[in-house]
Length: 285
Image (tube, rainbow, N blue to C red):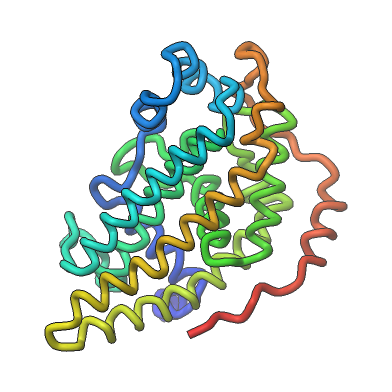
């Protein structure tokens, strides 16, 4: 009975879809491999090395160059997810839980791919440790916030900015575990997850209806995916590119970049500010 209630809860529903999609083949993007490939045509070997070892911002790579690369990645992922949506095909589909529709998992999987690529370009750390491994709570939290930005949740914008600010200030190479799992950002993660759980149900319903139309179903579904995925990816790109973490003026020497945990400060003040952000816009059908 409890399990049924958890599935009905929008927050739990979203996390079920997110974790299922994260386990699909090809969804996880390896940071070093992606950066080396993406930067190869635009940067010197020394810049690429420093970008991999520290961050693209610390390597002095301009936001203009990163924006061009980000747009190429967005176009690639948009074309790919739209084609797959039209064909309704996905690798590893039999491994999905029965509660996660194939189209929705496929769509979320490509959201995860572009979120990782944009994060790595704009100086966020590695988000996944390896194929098939469990997603840690901090990664789950930051991905939830990235998705919130993509869906237009204002509280997600504020929370991502707070996390990025903590990392930029302390020149850290790891996500702030405490802030995302128990600290000042965690309440916003839960709020955004509930919001996304409602929105994704609407998204899945619209896709299901489109596929029910004889002959035109594939074209309608592919077009619907293109019309929603592209602006969401661009929204995340714009937000990440505008954060201090992506700004080369905040560049650090390689020896200044640390592996340690980000330390939270002024928790009470930040929590009060978060509570004053106001409600997210109501989900639209």
